[in-house]
Length: 210
Image 1 (cartoon, rainbow, N blue to C red):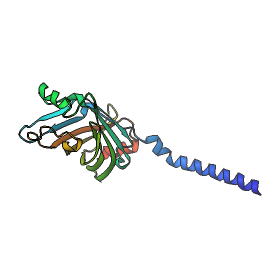
Image 2 (cartoon, one colour):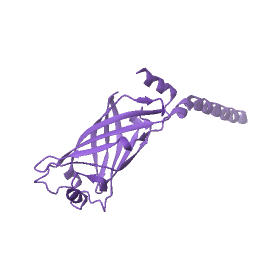
Image 3 (cartoon, rainbow, N blue to C red):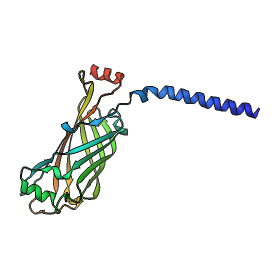
Image 4 (cartoon, rainbow, N blue to C red):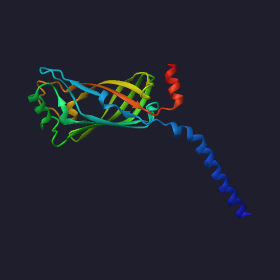
């Protein structure tokens, strides 16, 4: 009798495992892989005060874990090469690359990693994450605008364009030089594109119907 119960229990467990795998298989088969299209990514900043500076970063890369259609379970990491800062003035760029600001020789990478993405509505998401500059990590929060997904029938790629505006207090990262001339609050504008080439046929049909 004991042997019968063991055999029955094993068979039941195996059967339930097959059922669970069968139910999950569409999700596993069609979970899209997403990437950040760096060729369509833009990071710009502007300062206020006596000295007004507009600039940006030219080199970066990014990774996405999860599905852009399920942002609450998505994790994004952006890595920016600090040495790629550009303001249109070589002398000013050298100052920003130096020890008073980004100290690019010691801290070559600026990194943002999302910790929580909350969908506000289909066109907006609240993003929380950790921003690391010159070895200091601080939590930041901003609203990201999401355009409707676009499908390119030729390349078979789905693109979701995003935009965000945020304000960063440079003093929080210890970059407090030239405070009499440059305001502590820096305006940052980010544009990016999330792309995938293996979105499920069901999702593609929904995009086409929009």
